[in-house]
Image 1 (cartoon, one colour):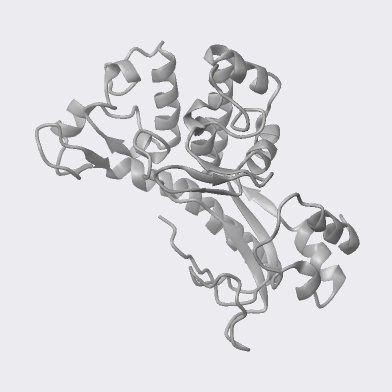
Image 2 (cartoon, rainbow, N blue to C red):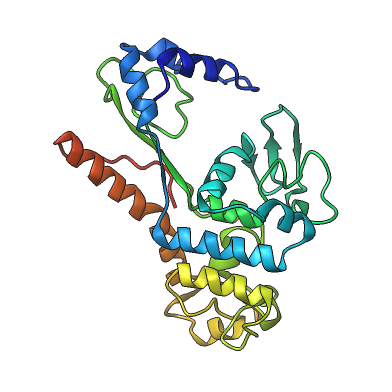
Length: 296
């Protein structure tokens, strides 16, 4: 277990500036030992189905990936990938243009779809950052962090201290990621949105897709994680409209939300969160009170 001094030194050595000093551990700590216990209690949250999916995708990338991907994933196991997923990510990654800020302070937008491909260029390389395929996987990974609280956890409170007595002084902050639809044919769009252009057999969708194709192997791996036999073709969604498939656009080539896939995707994030809360509450001998902001 790291000491309070080591934790403060590690925080001070980070290569980027914090947006506020109000919630740094050296300013919040009442007892150094409590901060040390908080740090020791940090834990990744990953559903068993998500873990199996990650291992399957890593194996697929080692077999059929680009030379860049095969080099990075050659010796990577699940534990190593979890570490990679927590470290090889931007500080900021937002908007339909993929605006980003890297740990180095570099800022720009776009280009993430080239990561892991032969045409990748610095600073957006697989050695430094996750590919879009990995970003979709990393969204399934949560992190539970025991910590002090400075406010009641509203969406736009930007670390401002709340009035005295307005929040619990300490608890567990859990970082989870809901579905992202800002980039067509990326992230959850691939697995929960059905379009005529995307959901074809050639791209691995539908019961008729060739199971030997790498694209099909990838979509089927995701389907297994979501508890489905396969991800649907557009024709299958049209035939199933009104039940599992909810129309979200008009016209002959209408697009659909796969409600079953969407619900299953959220379960992959929510179930580990609930189980972790239950376990921590049992250990503390008290009920767990949960406050979710903006998930899903």
